Length: 193
Image (cartoon, rainbow, N blue to C red):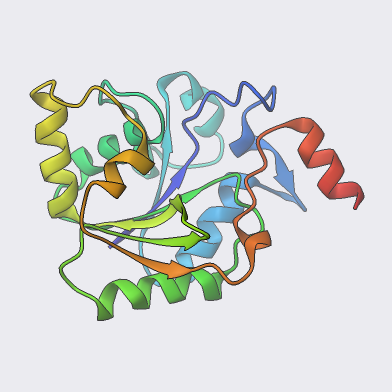
C-alpha cells in the first residue's frame, strides 16, 4: 500500500494552493504526509504540472507524481499515481483535511485488511461517502483506467463511480475530522471559532 496526499486541485475557491498553506510550521501537504507515514507506508504527493516548481522546494522528485491521466477532479490524481504504481493499493488523503488524525487512518487501513474483496474502502455519514480519505485497491484502479482509456467514462464524480460498485464503508463518528477547508472564509471562521 502507498499513501497518496492529493494536492493537485486548482484551489480556485481558496485562492491559493491549499497544499502550500501552513499548519504550525509545516505545509498542509507535509501535515497530511506525516499522518500517512505514521501508518508505516511509503507516501507520495499528487500534484498537477503547474505546481511542480513550488513543490520541488519541499520534496524530492521521486516523491512528486504529476497528473498524466486526462480526466477531471480527484480521479485525475488518483489514476495518475496508479499509473506510476500499478500493482499497489492506494490510500488517498486530501491535503485540505487538516483535522484528520492517525487513529482514523489506521482504522481505515485495518478495515481494508480485514474485509478483502471490495472495490473501495471509505468512510460514510448519513449516506454521504468521503472519497478523499479512502483506500483504492490496484485491481479496481486498473479496471477504472481501462474504462477511461476506452472513453466509456464520461462523468468523473468519485461518488457516482463508487456507488455503482462493490464498496465497504465505515461510519464516521466525528465529522470534524473530515472537514475539507475549501475557502478562505471557511478557514477563517474555523480558525476564529
